[in-house]
Image 1 (cartoon, helix red, strand yellow):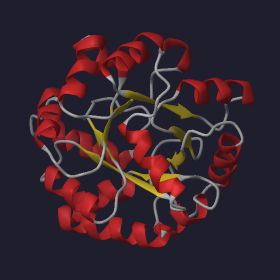
Image 2 (cartoon, rainbow, N blue to C red):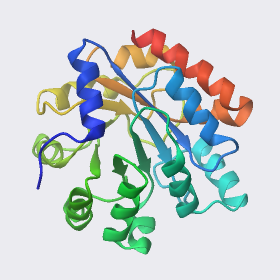
Image 3 (spheres, helix red, strand yellow):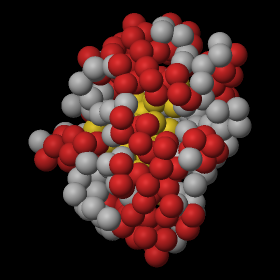
Length: 258
């Protein structure tokens, strides 16, 4: 098992070494003119981007991302169509896919990892795949050169967080609160606590997402974390305003973190 930083981790470490904070937005693949929106996000200062592969039963996602998934699926998008489109993109930042284990399982783990690598995808996030069952996928991903990003929940013990930090690649994804994705009025106190616990355990970049929906909330959590993942707020902008609105929002987050 290689422990050398891959393309995602290298970029996030570089941002940290320069004294900065990483910004990683999420956008649903297949949603409207999503490829233009990815380019707009990169141009506006995203360090890396998560692309969701739409799934009918997204257990960690709240109403906004569920709506985006439903729209993309209704338009006929497929996992392979999203991945093929990613393979044709050249936007200058590493990409991660975020989807659910059923899709990787249906592809076949080795084939899914190989397809990601062939399309230039740096990392994968499978939020419903627990650490104890992640071995076969992580081994297939390692062999293909794809970083497996693991999520760390606020309810996890220190012993479990240490094992998650030891196995994650790219970054460790600190879940900011108990609940599903979505924009809240205030940042949950658990988000900062989560960042602090993880930072004590690992040198891998610590990014916090879920419940980080405004530039002010991102700046608050990044007083401790190495970066923030922003999902529902970005998807809402895409649903309401399209790619230009996404670029404008990412610019606001970038300025807050800088």
